[in-house]
Length: 325
Image: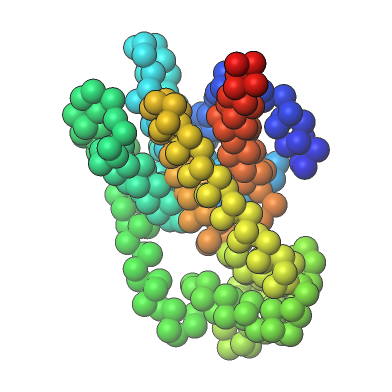
């Protein structure tokens, strides 16, 4: 994956290439969502048995699809033609519908946070197009109407269990992840350098109290990427992982400052869309093991490529222009 991401970074040499790469992800998200739509709910109020190569179960697929919603929203906003708007609207609706059918609480929470933050930035930013606030208001109204249409009773009932499971956390039942998270902290204390891939799975039966119902197996996943990194890569790996995500955030902020000077409004909000998509995945992966997820690598790739296209190349051109004068 590292080799592929490196090659992709070298091949994305301009804004058009970056858009093509992002559109490829959006098309893949739409296609996967269409498969979910065709499959339908085949396990009670959920869809199971669908996924990607690196995320064969439905929750992992939902986490991979969730960032596409805010990016679709961005392209719907900046598109100039009805055909383009229709494509991104359809792709966004199918992706949101897949989240509802899969009934992934983590992905729903991630989408709600990322989309709300993006819309807030669009509305209150001082760097705006003419009539931008009115457009954002209409998009918000249409989005709420669409959400009301695709959300059903089963989805609402499952979302209500987020609060109820937090209440049961104090009882340390098998319904909560907090017991596993607490055990992971103890694992990290005993193994500060980490245990390698699936290390927590191998030793969880030792650290999870015997009175906790863990289902058919005592060897369980930690169900959080942050603690997955901590137990597998140790404190050093965990710190480097935090630095990686922090670097992506500060890189996007640096690009936005450059785009304000250039007056490029569309690219400016594209950086916010990428930030919100990475935020979306960060929320999702808090509740599942996605350290080696391909989509995480793609989102980092989009940030790195944006830095190359909108910051490094522009500064290089400016320096050459000054030298020629």
